[in-house]
Length: 601
Image 1 (tube, helix red, strand yellow):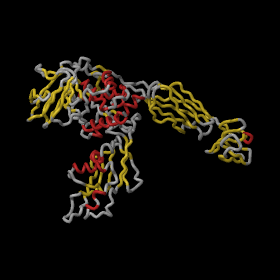
Image 2: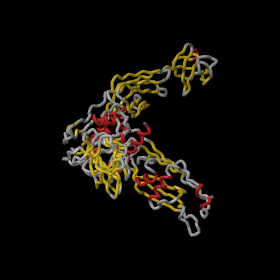
Image 3: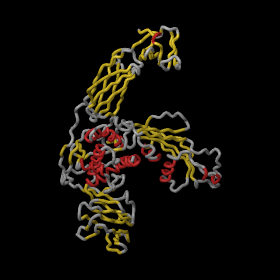
Image 4: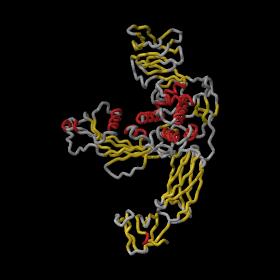
């Protein structure tokens, strides 16, 4: 399930990265039907098989297929021929079939689809178009955009985003590929279906209009502004740059040798002697570079990349994402030779081109985002690119939504964070007629409550426990400061915690006696903040060594291993007493000594 989930999350990035519509759905749009061309699963076919779980008719009332029957549709002379067994029973330019019972499903090449189905010829292939209710469409989309067994609140947020995205397109014929949203018909999942049913009709709006409900797999811990990614668009009020502590911060890295093939011992005039036996060092990025070259002037060419002297990214947006990149490739093409048959070295240099071109060349599954980290090139013979996130980072982070849900946040809180200044409304009622404009969520203005604060210390381990209770999920930081306000420790830093009892551990081994202040700060999913403080008194017992030389031992006996030595008049911290022995600490060493040779201060 883990691998399946990751695969589907990757799909979500491509869907929204390649499609950023500029239009708004018309306010008067009342239809709840989607029209979806079947391309993704079906592919380009000249023959398809149809089966049904119920009776289907044509618009004129003519029977088309009975429950349990099987028909074959073929492209013949640019038309659609229908066969029952081996007998042709009709020929059409195009045709539409509708279920007699709404609950019936039509199987097209063994995948079931709800609603009506229109069949046409497109480019010489059979192209079905599924006319399906928006709610059934969403059920077929969500488990292909987010793993269906993820937390129900994350699935609800994804469902509402997918429904909002789809309704902006209901006036056009979309398809079931990553160009829009991947749709799998009735081949859904009970858990994600439940999320759809529990949020039926809910969409996200800003100023009364459906929003661009953009999402990606992982934003790397920082959301991005839409206009930083798609430069032809105006900044949208409900998409902003802000820190997302709940994102999983998916990390990616690319490491390449600048020299892929050493040509110093290769005779370019005799490539037949070595060409087939020599391969590039890299097996991950180089194949993608070759594919790009083949698509850009070197179609079907046999080539070898010998060097990658340059591969870099630059020019960061206000959200920290790169917008430019440079690359140089030195390569050989098997049939580009001189008159004498000697290979002619080729060079491609791209300088300060769009970072999207660099990402396309190296592979979107290798350079997973534009949130690149500043790398220090420790080895001049290698190229290293590192970054965080998977996708464009605009709008909702799917991993962030999952982590927020698991921390106790509701779908309203998740949507409120990723799409600020928006409202969730019920766009249509159970009957599917017209906008209901019913607000579902109000802005959360209440700060988290931090109660039941308790502190306790253990001088043997030199650690203190700070326990407390949260009334809601929050991102928590716990800091300890001395009497002058200087922070001496941060036991918890920006950690996503569930509601309920929590604790932090402070190691006070390296501080002196005194009164310290522990401050707990909690920020909820709506960015409401609360801080509370409590005092912790550290009073360690000290003593002076009275013996000329005193051995510190591993255990409480004189035959135990010696772990250190103390000298007369040295001051030690007494951690604990065990019989006639003290456990003491001096510097960074601790051990047991006879209490007879320690005089308490």
